[in-house]
Image 1 (tube, helix red, strand yellow):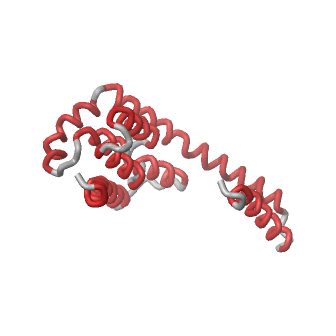
Image 2 (cartoon, rainbow, N blue to C red):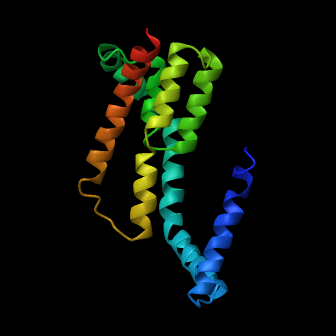
Length: 174
């Protein structure tokens, strides 16, 4: 970390406090109010988060992930999608920690500098944990109908999967 980087957070905090003082705001009271609101939001989000995490673990433990990977292998082959990356592509929209575990296994098995490792790295960095994000954001504001959010977000994830292969192929060759 650079000399300047070590001071960024303290300087930002000091700037916020100074702005509050200049505007004659009760900075600490505002901080406490925001902290209370944050706790209430966390309490509202917690059931959705626990349910999502439990469903992910049940999905992995049941062997359903392996069955889906096997069923999608022909589609992956047609798209030139390495079959070793399919579990990561399936887990990434659902769980950040689950996909990180799959990603770590890929890097351990194939190495970070392999084609598969590089595709996995680009995929991991360029896609979102869609279901988790929707559960958190919509849960925090009590929205139950996601309408077009999921189809649009999952389409973006799919394009991210495809483009991870294309970009690694174009930049690094394969």
